[in-house]
Amino acid sequence: MIESVVRASETAQRGEPSLELRHLHRFFGRLKAVDDVSFKAWPGQVMGFIGPNGAGKTTSMRILATLDTPTAGDAFVCGYSVVDDPDKVRRYLGFMPDSFGKYANMNVVEYLDFYARAYGLRDAQRRDAIEHVLVFTELRKLADKAINTLSKGMSQRLGLGRCLIHDPQVMVLDEPAAGLDPRARVELRELIRLLASEMKKTVLISSHILTELGEICDSAAIIEAGQILAYGTVAEIQRQQQATSGSIGTRALHVRLAAGDTLDEATSRLEKWLLEQPMVKDVQCSVGHATFDFEGNETEQQQLLQNLLTAGHPVIEFHGKSQSLEDAFMNITKGITQ
Ligand SMILES: Nc1ncnc2c1ncn2[C@@H]1O[C@H](COP(=O)(O)OP(=O)(O)OP(=O)(O)O)[C@@H](O)[C@H]1O
Ligand SMILES: [Mg+2]
Image (cartoon, rainbow, N blue to C red; front, side):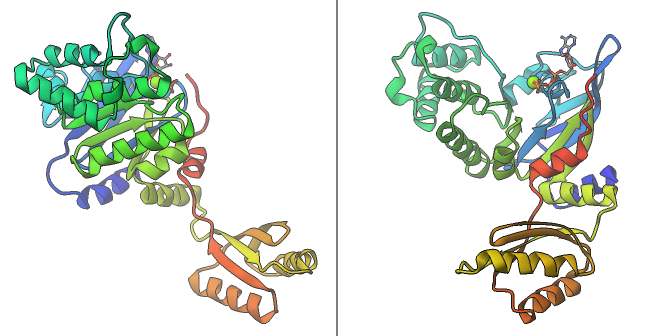
């Protein structure tokens, strides 16, 4: 099943992937931290790497960043192998770890300058790279601030800036939104979107904040206990989940009634009516609202709406409750820990 989903999403893509994990394994003794992980991502794509604690996300990302080596399998960044060509991989990949060192006595510009030098950027090239990062991350006004005095949000921006300094094609971000307040998360999300849409970078981003990932990612890989459980676009993952759970054809629907003096009474009448309908299951009502599962096809759903109106219910909204990435995650993962 996963194979067919993978093929479907790949045929929609063009050209060579900029990131590919191919049967990647990493064992620590008997613990299979990464156990045959394969997926691909293309330029301009933001891919979510989603999984519970201990699933193998950081281990996989560290291998991509050439900070660790696989037990078996390989990964490719812009066609270069992390095993055979780690130097080339470092040129094309920017890695933002989940936590990074904050050196005392170093300000924002000095920090970026240090990394620019480490990547071999010289003179005007280095000045331009630093300036570009300061502008992009809006850290210009904090250029002289000591980095051990930056707030969490500013540190994360600097971390993103640091891994952008050599203008890599592929960016691997390990939980970049962790610990950020809602505004800082939105701002980070916008930066990541720009990296993908304007600069055509490939971004692999891990997080537990699933709603955030749902808004920012066009595709996702769900990992648990070192294995990929689902991979593809969010819609493909949802379809796959429905097919494996055998619940295809079941839809969660929501009805809202127009406000009025007799809303309580109208809600009770609606609840009673829904409970009598065939193919309607698991009715849940609150004042003016009803949510339920419907086991019919589209024609039968259309008929249900017609019957609702004919029966005189003051319906003002009737829509499918789409499954979120969070729902898919909860349905697909089993809570396995190793
Ligand atoms: N150096 C190591 N030695 C032994 N075991 C390790 C090592 N690094 C990671 N592990 C184990 O490998 C598994 C995967 O860890 P990893 O850090 O990749 O998970 P994760 O998905 O990033 O989790 P989290 O969401 O908590 O960051 C865990 O069981 C972890 O304890
Ligand atoms: Mg981790």
